Image (cartoon, rainbow, N blue to C red; front, side, top):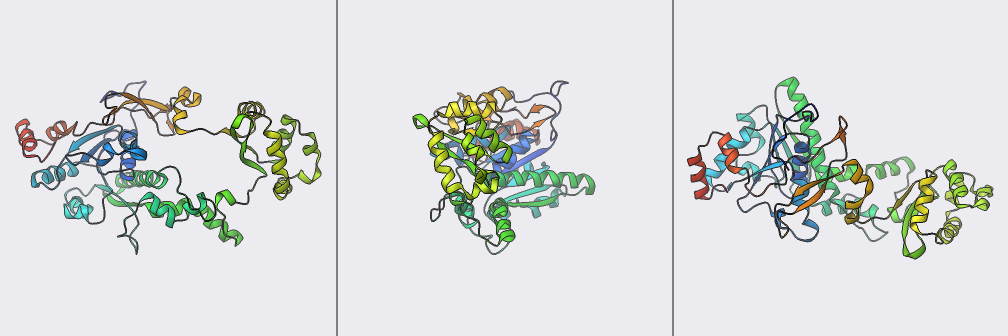
Length: 405
């Protein structure tokens, strides 16, 4: 990847070019906010401890955190416990348009890096807190994605009755970071009118409640509690995963009366099409206890590939059941530029090339690409300090003292 991509007629300026973001973040939520702003063109500077963000070396499910959420950023390594290092951090933060953080309540205040302290120096500063809970009775609890999924109804809705199950991705961390970025961009727009910055708060628990709001409203509208998704009363008769020939699986759906007619024609189910007890969607929903065993038996005579071809030919909803690693070879992602090459910065595969998923949007017909690889620890420390006015000798002295790396 190139560290700098100049704007050209074929490479228009990105929306947030010229803005500086300094992030004191770790794990997923805060880094996601910075990643969104970086992908949109902002100069995003990741402040790491001198021994590096912990996610650089996580195993298992966390192994992809750092490269996924830290592309398009610069890295500066600072020891905030050192007076000299803290002075560097404050000077860097004072140069920012946006500061983002996701530490426990009180940590940034202890270092004089909170909004109250920094806004005295820079009243135009936008300051984004990523927390577990908005201010209230829970605000001092330690929150994780799994914690808020359990207490916020999402795990209940995902699992089977009596078996709450967290979603298979860090949905609240990622969306919480996205809402932090949305808040930052709204505050930047407002700053253009008022000339003043503000503090923005994004929280995991409140994000989770937003996700399950549809189920809360279902209860408000119907007076009946929403059932967990595996035990739900479906709104559509054909809307399920089917086990088919040769051990395959495929999701198939027919969510309107017209689609039901097309489905019956496509599969040669004239008897089902002629059955007046199955004429409308609500009729078919009521008939699910007897209809679904019939469909499962008939559809099991086909392979998943055969059914996919039939459904695609007739414009019916379907989905193969894919694993994440299979998406690297997805023809649509390959054709639409949904994957981009990066150089891995850490671990056993450091220096090797891998592909990373891009944000799911286009601007002016273009995907928001990777301009910078995920940074090596402290890769931009000297460059950034010189930009703040430090001389080469001063940078060397700070490195020798251990205040920076």
